Image 1 (cartoon, rainbow, N blue to C red):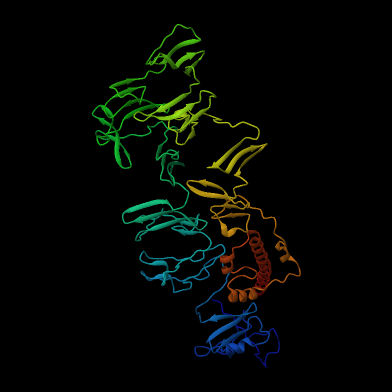
Image 2: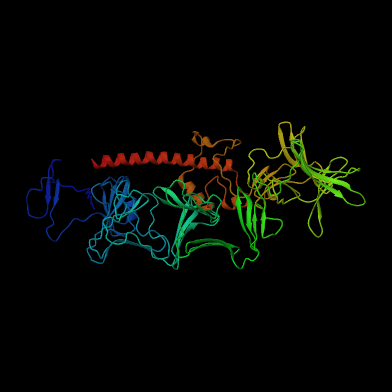
Length: 629
């Protein structure tokens, strides 16, 4: 700590030249060569500074730099430095100072006690120890003994004991390369230890919790937070090796690809999966009930149905089609998985036929099956015959007999009818095209029972074709191709909404008045053409109706509040000038464009304050340099 002594109003009657050197007190003799005035009080006298209260000191008009006063009410010495009274001693808290000294710390405390602390920071509500540095160390603590503590930070009210708002923090290193850098190379023990009851480590992105690591009793849990549409990925060798998506699907080698467990060994030379056990068993369950099993017993490979699954069959499928079945009674079906239940039921495929009918009519007329009525006379009813490249099913007789398709045994159900007079086709049951299991009255399946149909699978052709949806007798909605437009809508006689639904829930609403709602039927936002319930994400949003962009802040006649005025406003209103209060935002919300304008206004005002502050800093630095010379 430097002490500056300024002595004024000392008049020496015997001093007749301004360059003379004077010694007062002690053994007579010449003063020190470097001193213009030397005071020697021996061992019993000292220099008595001007004494006054601190208020008297503050009232001194135009005090000179270096002027020194002893404040009687504080029992402290003050020196005038750079236009301010600087308290020199005794050293009391709180104390703050700014120094430019590159060779050592601005403030350093060393405790040689083997169990003591270099610096101990304890606070109830404020800051225990505060350090700030431009390029050096903000706070440096050194423990000279293994039992000492270099730095101790403790908050008695479960608050923040140590806060590093900016900069990197190094543990075990003085050259941190990350926000938190732990270097245990020179340490022989455990590098890092976290001891907590039900330890929880939260992983956040922009303040939003995304993932976590948690210890619950003896379980270690790693995962994503609820509602986060992300994956848990385990990396090795610089690439993702195991993936767990938000639906719980697990992928090894690549993401799960829609499966509960997906193993991808395509780019490796290793075996995709190995099950090693004594008589290993792969059990298949349905809703927790054992249904089927694959098992190795000795040298035998068994594929079967569990004993409790009395109605289960073993079905072999190729190209998405069931071809071979062993039913629950042990009957074997080759090429046929339904129909007559025989010990052996064969339907040949390819060039072999289960039933071979031959005829002598050449290529145009092949064999057929003719259906007759036996009473009262032999009357033909219909036939199945190969005719000119087609297999024909024909109704016969003297009347316009149609065709009916009935299914069932005890009470056959009419599934389809072809009118004999006009050829109209009526399906009275579910009609499936491309599927044997139609789910609705009309089911068009491009999957085609295992064979994908690429490209167009259905076409409605006409002049401005339209598909009309009717509720009993009332037209409700339609789909139409009109010119080059494709329309989906409600009929003019139906003042209802157009609703888009996904996963069983209504998502998008186009109201009958043209309002567009996303995420719900937002009736409370009926004043807006577009309303969204929930969060909106986008790569860019453009607001084009913001008037009077706040570059007016840089105008010469702009009334820029001083920081003192801003402080008073904040204390009274608890928000920035020209910014809405929290209660207003919570009640009315805010416009993005208007809020962006206000934020830019505050940024530009802050920039002007920073420019002025920078000017003052440069001026103070210049004055300090002048005083130090």
